[in-house]
Length: 186
Ligand code: SF4
Image (cartoon, rainbow, N blue to C red; front, top):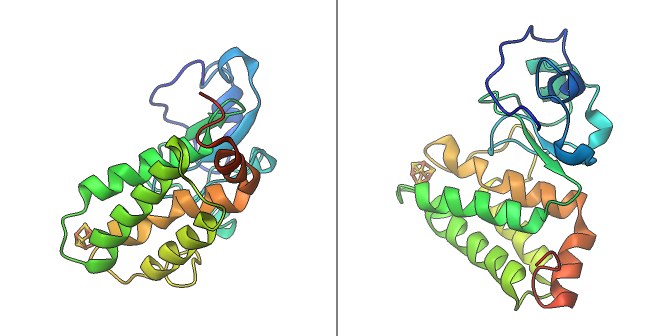
């Protein structure tokens, strides 16, 4: 957004579009780029596409669409964003933050992070998408929302959100990384 910051706005009466484009709030997307995806409530939240820009910013409204407002941290990924890189970096955060008590979180976050690193930096394979979805499913079985929890705390069940969203919404971006032998944005 042109005006990244902390805003206090009335729940439900405002939409993602209001938050992102209102001159008093986000002020639009940098260089008028198109919105590619929205992370509605922190990096634990499943992503939305631009078709949900007019969704009200309400817990129930966002929850019914399969995500959450969570921390209230709305992240806009514009049309130039590499979603593989974005999801890899988010997974790297979770991998580093894992305290190591639970096997799905401790091992799963590292396995996913390494597979995502490989896709982004060269060496990715077409079958990696299925592998990644399988790893995500082993951490949060069913990949439903709210997620099934196999771990002591919710950090574990938060790991799949970004990778699952990126693969589901942008499979061609993943394929392009495999065919290009790394990130085509570099
Ligand atoms: S889910 Fe929570 S308790 Fe379990 S390893 Fe991850 S951070 Fe630790």
